[in-house]
Image 1 (cartoon, rainbow, N blue to C red):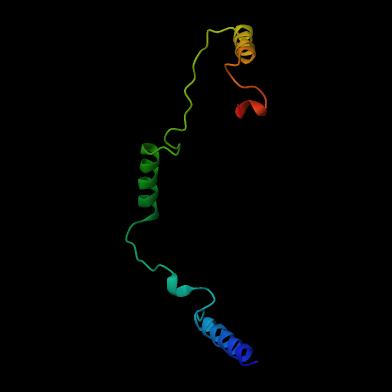
Image 2 (tube, helix red, strand yellow; image 1 turned 135 degrees about the horizontal axis):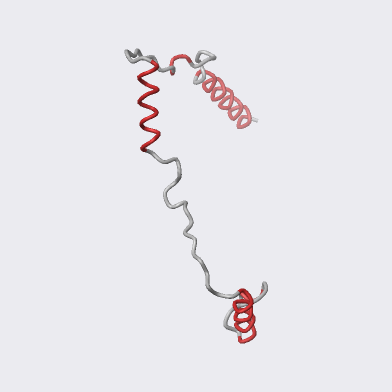
Length: 98
């Protein structure tokens, strides 16, 4: 019984202490960034338009290189079927175990 009472009192103190950690204004206004500027909206828009022209929004390495193949589709299928028959490449789900 003494152990249970001690555990409950420690839990109550911990819960009470955790409520104090959240004592703040509801809108979190102390984290709002306050700054003053002397630039006009037009100056900022002009700078943004020049930066957008010099930067790409496409991630590096995202372009896929395309190749023109000279192989015939039926020839490639025949080579793949021959490779499966001779055991050079696995086929099906069990093929990856061997």
